[in-house]
Image (tube, rainbow, N blue to C red; front, side, top):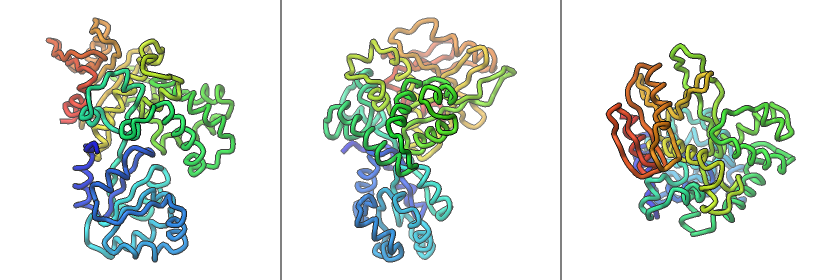
Length: 388
């Protein structure tokens, strides 16, 4: 088993709160993490039809089976259970009583906020981080962009294309209908594939609606479904304008490049280099790694992008209190003068100095202009440096 970076924070939260909710996409390793961390707690999966029926028909009797708490897996399957769980938590003084997992952020948070506010802590768990995967070997960049980071790809040595094809089918046929009863699943799947073709782009819902063949309201609803089930992530623009007119639309990314690659029809890692989406996938990879650094510490990322109306842009701006840390992302393996243009403009209008470039090569450099250049395989250091 690969030791998850989030495990220490999970243990810490369980000593401070009566319950902890571990939320993330399906197959991201939530069940493995909580069962390994709390091996002495009873485990029940609410995906099991018999268990779910018991919890639905007699929630009080179901919960009182576990006087010392339990792990409740996929708890969003029985939403009204949280009202009864509230009473049990209020009757106890112990911390870490119940550990709850869920793969639907919207359904889970909606019910938790209604019943368990102040009694529960959250931990978002995404697929493996680059730092976790380093333990298993030295990976090439194209291989990681193609494979992604879902644990079964590495635990079961399954062929990525086969695994993602079944993941997409299961997600659309089961999870999407659980969130919202979408009848035309073929159109929804086409919509998801069109989203993959927009990685790193400003999210224009009107254009997406035209290409998908549905109305703007439907696209907005479907974007919400992908967000709540940890398929996509919308990177918001930073509000600081520096006396410039700035873009206010969000940008679209996937939580996993392997899933995005499969949706783009990439068949193997050899196709990555010549693929027109390689730069977008690399940008997606870096941003997701920055998010994982924060999620594994049970914290919000506070990352944005910045773009003015003339096209000047910074790929990532990390906000840490009053400080802003600009990051440029370049997929090339050779450092060129073009890499510095965005940061030079940013420093000019913001009055700051320095910044960070992460690129697809392997050299680490500190330039005299204050700009630090990180190779892609040291992304984790960027996150730690920015949030000091």
